[in-house]
Image (cartoon, rainbow, N blue to C red; front, side, top):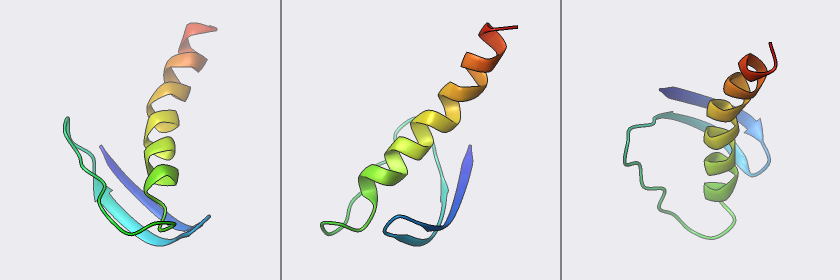
Length: 53
Protein backbone atom coordinates (compact mmCIF):
# COMPACT_ATOMS: atom_id res chain seq x y z
CA UNK A 1 0.00 0.00 0.00
CA UNK A 2 1.30 3.43 -0.88
CA UNK A 3 0.09 6.61 0.77
CA UNK A 4 0.68 10.14 -0.48
CA UNK A 5 -0.22 13.09 1.72
CA UNK A 6 -0.09 16.76 0.79
CA UNK A 7 -0.73 19.65 3.19
CA UNK A 8 -2.59 17.74 5.90
CA UNK A 9 -2.02 18.90 9.47
CA UNK A 10 1.72 19.19 10.08
CA UNK A 11 2.53 17.12 6.96
CA UNK A 12 3.65 19.21 3.99
CA UNK A 13 4.47 16.24 1.74
CA UNK A 14 4.79 12.51 2.36
CA UNK A 15 4.95 9.63 -0.12
CA UNK A 16 5.42 6.36 1.75
CA UNK A 17 5.09 2.69 0.86
CA UNK A 18 3.48 1.01 3.87
CA UNK A 19 4.70 -2.54 4.47
CA UNK A 20 3.82 -5.04 7.23
CA UNK A 21 6.43 -3.32 9.40
CA UNK A 22 6.80 0.39 8.80
CA UNK A 23 8.52 2.59 11.38
CA UNK A 24 7.79 6.29 11.60
CA UNK A 25 10.78 8.08 13.09
CA UNK A 26 11.25 11.82 13.44
CA UNK A 27 11.13 14.89 15.59
CA UNK A 28 8.14 15.97 17.64
CA UNK A 29 5.17 17.58 15.89
CA UNK A 30 6.18 16.46 12.38
CA UNK A 31 3.09 14.34 11.66
CA UNK A 32 4.08 10.79 12.64
CA UNK A 33 0.84 10.19 14.56
CA UNK A 34 -1.21 11.91 11.88
CA UNK A 35 0.31 9.66 9.22
CA UNK A 36 -0.28 6.55 11.35
CA UNK A 37 -3.96 7.50 11.76
CA UNK A 38 -4.34 8.12 8.03
CA UNK A 39 -2.89 4.67 7.29
CA UNK A 40 -5.19 3.04 9.84
CA UNK A 41 -8.36 4.75 8.61
CA UNK A 42 -7.34 4.27 4.99
CA UNK A 43 -7.39 0.52 5.61
CA UNK A 44 -10.42 0.45 7.95
CA UNK A 45 -12.92 2.61 6.04
CA UNK A 46 -13.27 0.35 2.95
CA UNK A 47 -13.83 -2.63 5.24
CA UNK A 48 -16.49 -0.72 7.20
CA UNK A 49 -18.26 0.37 4.04
CA UNK A 50 -18.30 -3.16 2.60
CA UNK A 51 -19.55 -4.58 5.91
CA UNK A 52 -22.65 -2.37 5.68
CA UNK A 53 -23.68 -3.57 2.19
